[in-house]
Amino acid sequence: MAAALLANTLYSIGFVLEKRALTSLPEVSIRQPARLLRLVLGSPLWIGGSLALAAGFGAQLIVYRTLPIAAAQGIFVSGLVLLVLLSARLLGEETTGRERYALGAILGALLMVVLSLDERADTVSQAAPYPLILLVCVPSLAAGVWLYGSAERRARHRHRMPTTGVEYGVAVGLLYGVSSLAIKGVSSYLTSSGLGGAVVDLLQSPYPYLLLFTGAFGLVMSQAALQRCRASLIVPVCTTVTCLFTAVLGTLSFGEALPHDPLRLALRLAGTALAVSVLLSMPKHDRSPAQPPVSAKELTPP
Image 1 (tube, rainbow, N blue to C red):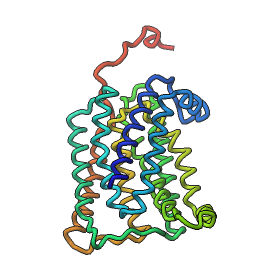
Image 2: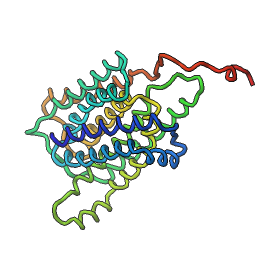
Image 3: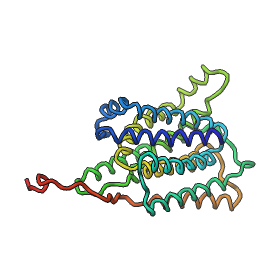
Image 4: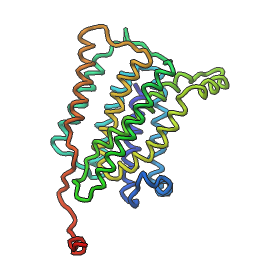
């Protein structure tokens, strides 16, 4: 529990620091990844945020060693409250009434998932069949990259309303969901003895390569999206998708059984369905209160 709460705090601080750093940088794009990396690595504030996220990753490894996947996701999502508070305080971001209701419903849905847990019956699995992991992860990675590309193409339309970042959040959330499963897999190789053999076994598994892919693509995609959209919306959407993906598919992949008690099973299924329905109903466009004036040159026809 302590490691999970620490991971929440580090992740929230890391995202807010990265967002604040990105607001002072020139516009970044996934089509120029080398330029993006050069810009962010030149920002001490961004580096501080990335170090906080890396420390949260270490805390997450400890969590997966001691808690069932679904329980861990329920605790991780509680960090959304801290994130929204930090975004309002340090970034000046304000959520709309509809978005606050949506975030409250998401927290309620994931609370239902937590209440469905039974510490006497739930077990912590440490292994999953590699073919099953790849069957789950590869299509999810392809779907995330495709969805992000679709959102990018729509956002390039000149007269299109600014996006809230829901599509970006879902796309990056799928990548981070795969990354979360890979972290769970890596945690099973953590041992106090036989370190050399554990490293060899780890390199023969798909987990380090999934982490490399999601780390590279997730870094570029998340930074470009975070610069364009409000952290107080895109990060909660991303976190919710990641938690649901990991809780549902991770539980099945690693063989952590669903609740046998009908009430607990109903809570878990209803919580998952509620969170998905809230995500689908969230606004897709940002209604900015003020737009910059259109110059005379822009009004002149070619």
